[in-house]
Amino acid sequence: MLSRTADHLFWMARYTERAENTARMLDVTVQTSLLPQSAAAAEEGWRAMLSICELQQLFDDKYPVLTQKAVLDFMVRDPDNPSSIAACLTAARENARAVRGTLTTEVWETENTTWLDMQRLLKDGMLERDPSEFFEWVKFRSHLSRGVTLGTMLKDDAFHFIRLGSFLERADNTARIIDVKFHSASNSGERSARRVDQESQLDFYYWAAVLRSVSCFEIYRKVYRDVITPARVAEILMLRADMPRSLLACMEEVIVNLHSVRNDVSANTERLAGKLHADLKFVRIEDILESGLHDYLTDFMKRVSELGDSINRDFLLPSAA
Image (cartoon, rainbow, N blue to C red; front, side, top):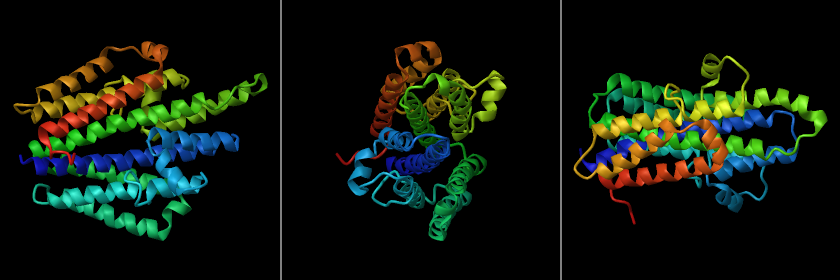
């Protein structure tokens, strides 16, 4: 397969997945902002999300005051933010258009219709009326894109590059979702003795919102059948191979699809992916928490970025640099 074609397919999938995960991150932040808390704590939650997405400086340069409305506008529709949902879905559609002949009609029409409907929904004010409804729509369109790909495309190199892009992006974004929510929780302030009972009740709604943001609430209940604890939330989102959005599950899919498109120069890329997968497969959540969850996730995201660069060198278009 030509590297240009592989590049478009890979990034079509990554941008679609990124739009979905941005919607998930925004939705859980909106939901947790509705819980009883101080204005400073709510603002800290939004800042944590911008920081973990590496967009704090870009936001501050454009918006003098941080408000929920400003962050939603920046993360959903701002054309100057390359990671906004609108920018991601536009980029996904443009990459699909460039390789329209490689895709089935159903896949192309799904990407194109998503782009057209997004513009209509934003113009009609759905984001302002009901942000959660808009985020559910984004997630649904991403689900539809993956389902149509699985149901209509030949399992050839084109298919594997699409899947590779999807799961590499999902691994990075799941790590960011975990990091931003644990960061927000750890910086929520000291608990006074008389607030322990109240906050223990809020913990359930807080972590339930985190689990729902990655479609994991029912899975958690089925696996643990017990109270929701931060350690178990981290474990199921990181180390459960049977949880579809976990870090380990994503890396297993990356390994499989990398093997399917391997070439004469990809041995080092496969080694990087294999080592990252092995580190997740054989580590215990207790060891991660003891050494520091934030440090572990920061290192994971760095290694995923390095893996993406290596895939780019071995299979895709040369970088502009």
